[in-house]
Length: 451
Image 1 (cartoon, one colour):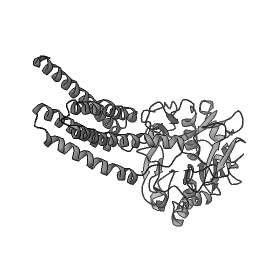
Image 2: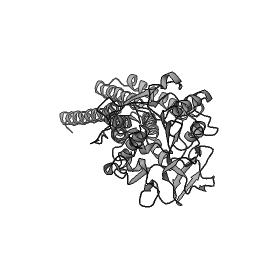
Image 3: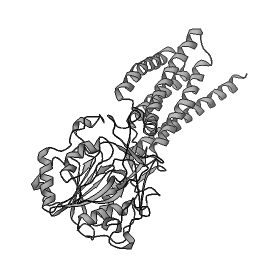
Protein backbone atom coordinates (compact mmCIF):
# COMPACT_ATOMS: atom_id res chain seq x y z
CA UNK A 1 0.00 0.00 0.00
CA UNK A 2 1.22 3.49 -0.82
CA UNK A 3 2.76 5.11 2.30
CA UNK A 4 0.90 8.39 1.76
CA UNK A 5 -2.44 6.58 1.49
CA UNK A 6 -1.63 4.56 4.60
CA UNK A 7 -0.71 7.75 6.44
CA UNK A 8 -3.99 9.39 5.36
CA UNK A 9 -6.01 6.44 6.65
CA UNK A 10 -4.15 6.46 9.96
CA UNK A 11 -4.69 10.18 10.31
CA UNK A 12 -8.41 9.72 9.64
CA UNK A 13 -8.63 6.94 12.23
CA UNK A 14 -6.88 9.14 14.79
CA UNK A 15 -9.21 12.02 13.99
CA UNK A 16 -12.25 9.78 14.51
CA UNK A 17 -10.73 8.61 17.79
CA UNK A 18 -10.20 12.18 19.03
CA UNK A 19 -13.71 13.21 18.03
CA UNK A 20 -15.24 10.16 19.72
CA UNK A 21 -13.37 10.80 22.97
CA UNK A 22 -14.27 14.50 22.90
CA UNK A 23 -17.98 13.75 22.40
CA UNK A 24 -17.90 11.20 25.24
CA UNK A 25 -16.20 13.67 27.57
CA UNK A 26 -18.76 16.36 26.74
CA UNK A 27 -21.63 13.96 27.51
CA UNK A 28 -20.05 13.10 30.89
CA UNK A 29 -19.45 16.80 31.62
CA UNK A 30 -23.04 17.69 30.69
CA UNK A 31 -24.30 15.00 33.09
CA UNK A 32 -22.36 16.64 35.91
CA UNK A 33 -23.67 20.12 35.00
CA UNK A 34 -27.21 18.71 35.04
CA UNK A 35 -26.59 17.35 38.54
CA UNK A 36 -25.13 20.64 39.82
CA UNK A 37 -28.12 22.65 38.57
CA UNK A 38 -30.65 20.01 39.73
CA UNK A 39 -32.18 19.30 36.35
CA UNK A 40 -33.86 15.92 35.77
CA UNK A 41 -32.48 13.00 33.74
CA UNK A 42 -28.94 13.30 35.10
CA UNK A 43 -28.79 9.49 35.26
CA UNK A 44 -29.68 9.02 31.57
CA UNK A 45 -26.95 11.36 30.36
CA UNK A 46 -24.37 9.99 32.80
CA UNK A 47 -25.01 6.38 31.78
CA UNK A 48 -24.82 7.40 28.11
CA UNK A 49 -21.34 8.81 28.77
CA UNK A 50 -20.30 5.66 30.63
CA UNK A 51 -21.55 3.44 27.82
CA UNK A 52 -19.70 5.50 25.18
CA UNK A 53 -16.53 5.26 27.24
CA UNK A 54 -16.85 1.51 27.80
CA UNK A 55 -18.23 0.33 24.48
CA UNK A 56 -16.48 2.66 21.99
CA UNK A 57 -13.52 4.58 23.42
CA UNK A 58 -11.78 1.82 25.39
CA UNK A 59 -12.09 -0.84 22.64
CA UNK A 60 -10.79 1.66 20.06
CA UNK A 61 -7.82 2.47 22.28
CA UNK A 62 -7.12 -1.24 22.69
CA UNK A 63 -7.28 -1.70 18.92
CA UNK A 64 -4.73 1.09 18.38
CA UNK A 65 -2.31 -0.53 20.83
CA UNK A 66 -2.78 -4.10 19.61
CA UNK A 67 -2.75 -3.69 15.84
CA UNK A 68 1.06 -4.01 15.67
CA UNK A 69 2.17 -5.79 18.86
CA UNK A 70 5.93 -6.05 19.23
CA UNK A 71 5.75 -9.50 20.79
CA UNK A 72 3.52 -11.87 22.72
CA UNK A 73 4.28 -10.10 25.99
CA UNK A 74 3.21 -6.77 24.47
CA UNK A 75 -0.11 -8.35 23.46
CA UNK A 76 -0.71 -9.64 27.00
CA UNK A 77 0.45 -6.36 28.52
CA UNK A 78 -2.10 -4.24 26.64
CA UNK A 79 -5.01 -6.64 27.10
CA UNK A 80 -4.26 -6.84 30.82
CA UNK A 81 -4.03 -3.05 31.27
CA UNK A 82 -7.11 -2.17 29.22
CA UNK A 83 -9.07 -4.92 31.01
CA UNK A 84 -8.41 -3.23 34.33
CA UNK A 85 -9.45 0.13 32.89
CA UNK A 86 -12.62 -1.52 31.61
CA UNK A 87 -13.34 -3.19 34.99
CA UNK A 88 -12.91 0.15 36.75
CA UNK A 89 -15.55 1.71 34.53
CA UNK A 90 -17.76 -1.34 34.93
CA UNK A 91 -17.65 -0.92 38.72
CA UNK A 92 -18.58 2.74 38.33
CA UNK A 93 -21.43 1.74 36.02
CA UNK A 94 -22.66 -0.76 38.64
CA UNK A 95 -22.29 1.86 41.35
CA UNK A 96 -24.65 4.18 39.47
CA UNK A 97 -27.19 1.60 38.37
CA UNK A 98 -27.23 -0.44 41.61
CA UNK A 99 -29.29 2.10 43.62
CA UNK A 100 -32.04 1.77 41.02
CA UNK A 101 -32.04 -2.00 41.38
CA UNK A 102 -31.88 -1.66 45.15
CA UNK A 103 -34.91 0.62 45.14
CA UNK A 104 -37.02 -1.63 42.93
CA UNK A 105 -35.89 -5.02 44.27
CA UNK A 106 -35.42 -4.06 47.94
CA UNK A 107 -31.93 -5.53 48.13
CA UNK A 108 -29.21 -4.25 50.49
CA UNK A 109 -27.21 -1.26 49.30
CA UNK A 110 -23.49 -1.63 48.60
CA UNK A 111 -21.58 0.63 50.98
CA UNK A 112 -18.97 3.19 49.93
CA UNK A 113 -16.35 1.16 51.81
CA UNK A 114 -17.14 -2.00 49.84
CA UNK A 115 -16.87 -0.14 46.55
CA UNK A 116 -13.62 1.54 47.63
CA UNK A 117 -12.06 -1.82 48.50
CA UNK A 118 -12.81 -2.98 44.95
CA UNK A 119 -11.92 0.27 43.18
CA UNK A 120 -8.60 1.25 44.80
CA UNK A 121 -6.41 -1.73 43.73
CA UNK A 122 -7.93 -1.79 40.24
CA UNK A 123 -7.39 1.96 39.88
CA UNK A 124 -3.75 1.60 40.97
CA UNK A 125 -3.09 -1.12 38.41
CA UNK A 126 -4.72 1.02 35.72
CA UNK A 127 -2.58 4.03 36.64
CA UNK A 128 0.60 1.92 36.56
CA UNK A 129 -0.35 0.68 33.09
CA UNK A 130 -0.97 4.20 31.82
CA UNK A 131 2.33 5.39 33.31
CA UNK A 132 4.28 2.70 31.47
CA UNK A 133 2.40 3.54 28.29
CA UNK A 134 3.74 7.09 28.42
CA UNK A 135 7.40 6.05 28.88
CA UNK A 136 7.44 2.84 26.81
CA UNK A 137 7.07 4.04 23.23
CA UNK A 138 8.96 6.86 21.54
CA UNK A 139 6.73 6.99 18.45
CA UNK A 140 5.51 10.60 18.41
CA UNK A 141 2.03 9.99 16.95
CA UNK A 142 1.41 6.96 19.15
CA UNK A 143 2.58 8.87 22.22
CA UNK A 144 0.34 11.81 21.29
CA UNK A 145 -2.77 9.63 20.99
CA UNK A 146 -1.92 7.78 24.22
CA UNK A 147 -1.35 11.01 26.12
CA UNK A 148 -4.65 12.38 24.84
CA UNK A 149 -6.54 9.25 25.85
CA UNK A 150 -4.99 9.03 29.32
CA UNK A 151 -5.88 12.68 30.07
CA UNK A 152 -9.38 12.08 28.69
CA UNK A 153 -9.83 8.84 30.67
CA UNK A 154 -8.62 10.24 34.01
CA UNK A 155 -10.67 13.43 33.59
CA UNK A 156 -13.76 11.33 32.84
CA UNK A 157 -13.17 9.19 35.93
CA UNK A 158 -12.87 12.34 38.07
CA UNK A 159 -16.12 13.83 36.78
CA UNK A 160 -17.93 10.50 37.10
CA UNK A 161 -16.80 10.33 40.72
CA UNK A 162 -18.13 13.84 41.35
CA UNK A 163 -21.47 12.80 39.84
CA UNK A 164 -22.09 10.27 42.60
CA UNK A 165 -24.41 9.61 44.36
CA UNK A 166 -27.48 9.25 42.20
CA UNK A 167 -30.52 10.46 44.14
CA UNK A 168 -33.28 7.87 44.17
CA UNK A 169 -35.72 10.62 45.11
CA UNK A 170 -34.87 13.98 43.59
CA UNK A 171 -37.19 16.97 43.95
CA UNK A 172 -39.20 17.89 40.89
CA UNK A 173 -38.24 21.54 40.77
CA UNK A 174 -40.38 22.16 37.69
CA UNK A 175 -43.68 21.21 39.38
CA UNK A 176 -45.53 24.47 39.97
CA UNK A 177 -49.34 24.12 40.07
CA UNK A 178 -51.55 27.17 39.88
CA UNK A 179 -53.41 28.34 42.98
CA UNK A 180 -56.37 30.42 41.73
CA UNK A 181 -57.63 31.40 45.17
CA UNK A 182 -54.68 31.85 47.56
CA UNK A 183 -55.40 32.16 51.24
CA UNK A 184 -53.35 35.38 51.54
CA UNK A 185 -51.61 37.90 49.36
CA UNK A 186 -48.00 36.95 48.72
CA UNK A 187 -45.85 37.04 51.84
CA UNK A 188 -48.41 38.30 54.36
CA UNK A 189 -49.68 34.94 55.63
CA UNK A 190 -48.69 33.40 58.97
CA UNK A 191 -45.24 31.92 59.55
CA UNK A 192 -44.80 28.20 58.85
CA UNK A 193 -41.70 26.50 60.21
CA UNK A 194 -40.42 23.32 58.55
CA UNK A 195 -38.28 21.34 60.95
CA UNK A 196 -34.69 20.70 59.84
CA UNK A 197 -33.13 20.26 63.27
CA UNK A 198 -33.70 16.53 63.74
CA UNK A 199 -31.80 14.77 60.93
CA UNK A 200 -34.86 15.18 58.74
CA UNK A 201 -34.92 13.08 55.58
CA UNK A 202 -36.86 15.92 53.91
CA UNK A 203 -35.63 19.52 53.92
CA UNK A 204 -36.94 22.78 52.49
CA UNK A 205 -34.10 23.17 49.99
CA UNK A 206 -34.31 19.60 48.75
CA UNK A 207 -37.25 17.17 48.82
CA UNK A 208 -39.63 19.84 50.17
CA UNK A 209 -38.70 22.61 47.77
CA UNK A 210 -41.96 22.29 45.79
CA UNK A 211 -43.96 21.87 49.01
CA UNK A 212 -42.56 25.14 50.31
CA UNK A 213 -43.18 26.85 46.97
CA UNK A 214 -46.86 25.85 46.98
CA UNK A 215 -47.32 27.16 50.52
CA UNK A 216 -45.63 30.43 49.59
CA UNK A 217 -47.88 30.79 46.53
CA UNK A 218 -50.78 30.41 48.96
CA UNK A 219 -49.44 33.48 50.79
CA UNK A 220 -47.63 31.87 53.73
CA UNK A 221 -44.16 32.70 54.97
CA UNK A 222 -42.16 29.47 55.01
CA UNK A 223 -38.85 29.08 56.84
CA UNK A 224 -36.60 26.28 58.01
CA UNK A 225 -36.36 25.61 61.74
CA UNK A 226 -32.87 24.64 62.87
CA UNK A 227 -31.91 23.10 66.19
CA UNK A 228 -34.00 21.79 69.05
CA UNK A 229 -37.49 23.08 69.81
CA UNK A 230 -37.53 25.99 72.23
CA UNK A 231 -40.52 27.89 73.57
CA UNK A 232 -39.24 31.37 72.72
CA UNK A 233 -38.38 30.35 69.13
CA UNK A 234 -41.82 28.86 68.44
CA UNK A 235 -43.82 31.81 69.77
CA UNK A 236 -44.05 33.60 66.39
CA UNK A 237 -44.88 30.44 64.46
CA UNK A 238 -48.46 29.53 63.53
CA UNK A 239 -47.82 26.11 61.96
CA UNK A 240 -44.95 23.71 62.64
CA UNK A 241 -44.32 21.01 60.04
CA UNK A 242 -42.19 18.03 61.04
CA UNK A 243 -41.45 15.49 58.31
CA UNK A 244 -39.40 12.32 58.75
CA UNK A 245 -37.29 13.26 61.74
CA UNK A 246 -34.68 10.71 62.83
CA UNK A 247 -32.53 10.04 65.83
CA UNK A 248 -28.81 10.37 65.11
CA UNK A 249 -28.42 6.61 65.60
CA UNK A 250 -30.64 5.89 62.58
CA UNK A 251 -29.22 8.28 59.99
CA UNK A 252 -27.25 5.51 58.28
CA UNK A 253 -28.77 2.50 60.04
CA UNK A 254 -32.48 2.00 59.35
CA UNK A 255 -32.92 -0.80 61.85
CA UNK A 256 -34.04 -1.34 65.42
CA UNK A 257 -33.76 0.23 67.89
CA UNK A 258 -35.31 3.49 66.66
CA UNK A 259 -34.99 5.99 69.53
CA UNK A 260 -37.00 9.18 69.62
CA UNK A 261 -35.79 12.01 67.42
CA UNK A 262 -36.98 14.44 70.11
CA UNK A 263 -35.88 14.84 73.70
CA UNK A 264 -38.52 14.72 76.48
CA UNK A 265 -37.95 18.44 76.99
CA UNK A 266 -38.66 19.20 73.32
CA UNK A 267 -41.83 17.11 73.38
CA UNK A 268 -43.08 19.09 76.37
CA UNK A 269 -42.27 22.36 74.57
CA UNK A 270 -44.22 21.32 71.46
CA UNK A 271 -47.08 19.93 73.54
CA UNK A 272 -47.39 23.18 75.50
CA UNK A 273 -47.07 25.26 72.32
CA UNK A 274 -49.90 23.35 70.63
CA UNK A 275 -52.03 23.52 73.76
CA UNK A 276 -51.66 27.29 73.72
CA UNK A 277 -52.88 27.61 70.13
CA UNK A 278 -50.09 26.33 67.88
CA UNK A 279 -50.75 23.95 64.98
CA UNK A 280 -48.66 20.86 64.25
CA UNK A 281 -48.39 18.81 61.05
CA UNK A 282 -46.46 15.64 61.94
CA UNK A 283 -45.49 13.33 59.08
CA UNK A 284 -43.70 10.00 59.50
CA UNK A 285 -43.02 7.64 56.62
CA UNK A 286 -42.28 3.92 56.92
CA UNK A 287 -39.91 2.40 59.46
CA UNK A 288 -37.72 3.82 61.09
CA UNK A 289 -39.52 7.21 60.97
CA UNK A 290 -42.58 6.14 63.02
CA UNK A 291 -40.29 4.90 65.78
CA UNK A 292 -38.45 8.23 65.84
CA UNK A 293 -41.73 10.20 65.97
CA UNK A 294 -43.63 7.82 68.28
CA UNK A 295 -43.13 9.70 71.56
CA UNK A 296 -44.12 13.05 70.05
CA UNK A 297 -47.22 11.62 68.33
CA UNK A 298 -48.17 9.73 71.48
CA UNK A 299 -48.13 12.99 73.45
CA UNK A 300 -51.28 13.85 71.45
CA UNK A 301 -52.78 10.35 71.64
CA UNK A 302 -51.60 8.88 68.30
CA UNK A 303 -50.10 5.37 68.24
CA UNK A 304 -47.64 5.09 65.36
CA UNK A 305 -46.80 1.58 64.12
CA UNK A 306 -43.10 1.27 63.25
CA UNK A 307 -43.55 -0.65 60.01
CA UNK A 308 -44.41 -0.71 56.31
CA UNK A 309 -48.02 -0.58 55.11
CA UNK A 310 -48.58 -2.06 51.65
CA UNK A 311 -51.49 -2.83 49.39
CA UNK A 312 -51.52 -6.56 48.61
CA UNK A 313 -52.93 -5.95 45.11
CA UNK A 314 -50.89 -2.98 43.88
CA UNK A 315 -47.77 -0.83 44.33
CA UNK A 316 -49.43 2.50 45.12
CA UNK A 317 -51.95 3.20 47.85
CA UNK A 318 -55.23 4.63 46.62
CA UNK A 319 -57.79 6.33 48.84
CA UNK A 320 -61.17 7.27 47.31
CA UNK A 321 -64.10 9.26 48.58
CA UNK A 322 -66.36 6.86 46.68
CA UNK A 323 -65.41 3.76 48.70
CA UNK A 324 -65.03 5.56 52.02
CA UNK A 325 -61.25 5.16 52.38
CA UNK A 326 -61.01 8.93 51.85
CA UNK A 327 -63.38 10.41 54.42
CA UNK A 328 -65.84 13.23 53.98
CA UNK A 329 -64.80 15.98 56.40
CA UNK A 330 -63.71 19.59 56.69
CA UNK A 331 -60.20 18.85 55.35
CA UNK A 332 -61.21 16.80 52.32
CA UNK A 333 -64.03 19.27 51.52
CA UNK A 334 -61.89 22.42 51.66
CA UNK A 335 -63.32 25.93 51.59
CA UNK A 336 -65.58 25.33 48.58
CA UNK A 337 -66.44 22.78 45.91
CA UNK A 338 -63.35 23.71 43.87
CA UNK A 339 -61.12 22.56 46.75
CA UNK A 340 -62.92 19.27 47.31
CA UNK A 341 -60.54 16.30 47.28
CA UNK A 342 -61.90 13.21 45.54
CA UNK A 343 -58.91 10.85 45.74
CA UNK A 344 -55.42 10.63 47.22
CA UNK A 345 -52.42 8.49 46.31
CA UNK A 346 -49.74 7.63 48.85
CA UNK A 347 -46.53 5.67 48.44
CA UNK A 348 -46.38 2.96 51.11
CA UNK A 349 -45.65 4.62 54.47
CA UNK A 350 -47.12 3.21 57.68
CA UNK A 351 -50.45 2.76 59.44
CA UNK A 352 -51.30 4.23 62.84
CA UNK A 353 -54.09 4.29 65.40
CA UNK A 354 -55.83 7.50 66.36
CA UNK A 355 -57.19 8.84 69.66
CA UNK A 356 -60.94 8.94 70.33
CA UNK A 357 -61.21 12.67 69.61
CA UNK A 358 -59.44 12.44 66.22
CA UNK A 359 -61.11 12.32 62.79
CA UNK A 360 -59.75 10.19 59.98
CA UNK A 361 -58.72 11.68 56.65
CA UNK A 362 -57.66 8.35 55.09
CA UNK A 363 -58.20 4.80 56.29
CA UNK A 364 -56.96 1.47 54.94
CA UNK A 365 -59.36 -1.10 53.55
CA UNK A 366 -59.11 -4.89 53.85
CA UNK A 367 -56.49 -5.17 51.06
CA UNK A 368 -53.77 -3.65 53.21
CA UNK A 369 -51.26 -5.35 55.49
CA UNK A 370 -48.45 -4.03 57.63
CA UNK A 371 -45.00 -5.52 58.23
CA UNK A 372 -42.92 -4.50 61.25
CA UNK A 373 -39.36 -5.65 60.40
CA UNK A 374 -36.15 -5.17 62.36
CA UNK A 375 -34.62 -3.40 59.34
CA UNK A 376 -36.38 -1.24 56.77
CA UNK A 377 -37.67 -3.25 53.77
CA UNK A 378 -36.37 -6.58 55.14
CA UNK A 379 -39.84 -8.11 55.27
CA UNK A 380 -39.45 -11.60 53.79
CA UNK A 381 -39.32 -13.36 57.17
CA UNK A 382 -41.95 -11.14 58.83
CA UNK A 383 -45.59 -12.13 59.24
CA UNK A 384 -47.81 -9.17 58.31
CA UNK A 385 -51.07 -8.26 60.00
CA UNK A 386 -54.25 -6.62 58.80
CA UNK A 387 -54.52 -2.84 59.13
CA UNK A 388 -58.15 -2.63 58.13
CA UNK A 389 -59.56 0.69 59.37
CA UNK A 390 -56.16 1.89 60.55
CA UNK A 391 -55.35 5.46 59.58
CA UNK A 392 -52.81 7.04 57.25
CA UNK A 393 -54.06 10.54 57.91
CA UNK A 394 -56.06 12.08 60.76
CA UNK A 395 -56.60 15.33 62.62
CA UNK A 396 -57.62 16.46 66.09
CA UNK A 397 -57.65 19.40 68.46
CA UNK A 398 -55.47 19.66 71.53
CA UNK A 399 -56.20 22.42 74.02
CA UNK A 400 -56.46 25.56 71.93
CA UNK A 401 -54.32 24.13 69.14
CA UNK A 402 -54.57 21.58 66.33
CA UNK A 403 -52.73 18.48 65.18
CA UNK A 404 -52.62 16.63 61.84
CA UNK A 405 -50.73 13.34 61.53
CA UNK A 406 -49.85 11.72 58.19
CA UNK A 407 -48.35 8.26 57.76
CA UNK A 408 -46.52 8.93 54.48
CA UNK A 409 -44.45 11.86 53.24
CA UNK A 410 -44.23 11.61 49.46
CA UNK A 411 -47.92 12.39 49.03
CA UNK A 412 -47.24 16.04 49.96
CA UNK A 413 -43.98 16.34 48.02
CA UNK A 414 -43.15 16.31 44.29
CA UNK A 415 -40.27 14.01 43.45
CA UNK A 416 -38.62 12.23 40.54
CA UNK A 417 -37.60 8.60 40.94
CA UNK A 418 -33.84 8.34 40.29
CA UNK A 419 -33.99 11.90 38.99
CA UNK A 420 -35.77 10.78 35.81
CA UNK A 421 -38.48 13.12 34.56
CA UNK A 422 -40.81 10.31 33.51
CA UNK A 423 -40.90 8.78 37.01
CA UNK A 424 -43.07 11.26 38.88
CA UNK A 425 -43.86 10.45 42.49
CA UNK A 426 -46.05 12.53 44.74
CA UNK A 427 -48.07 15.64 44.00
CA UNK A 428 -46.58 15.87 40.49
CA UNK A 429 -47.89 12.45 39.44
CA UNK A 430 -50.67 12.53 36.85
CA UNK A 431 -52.65 10.10 39.02
CA UNK A 432 -52.28 12.25 42.16
CA UNK A 433 -54.17 15.27 40.86
CA UNK A 434 -55.76 16.08 44.24
CA UNK A 435 -52.68 15.61 46.46
CA UNK A 436 -51.47 19.21 46.42
CA UNK A 437 -54.99 20.39 47.23
CA UNK A 438 -55.03 18.08 50.25
CA UNK A 439 -51.82 19.74 51.45
CA UNK A 440 -53.41 23.18 51.14
CA UNK A 441 -56.62 22.01 52.83
CA UNK A 442 -54.61 20.64 55.76
CA UNK A 443 -52.74 23.92 56.14
CA UNK A 444 -55.99 25.91 55.91
CA UNK A 445 -57.53 23.82 58.70
CA UNK A 446 -54.43 24.20 60.85
CA UNK A 447 -54.62 27.93 60.19
CA UNK A 448 -58.35 27.97 61.19
CA UNK A 449 -59.36 29.26 57.74
CA UNK A 450 -61.73 26.27 57.59
CA UNK A 451 -63.45 24.87 60.64
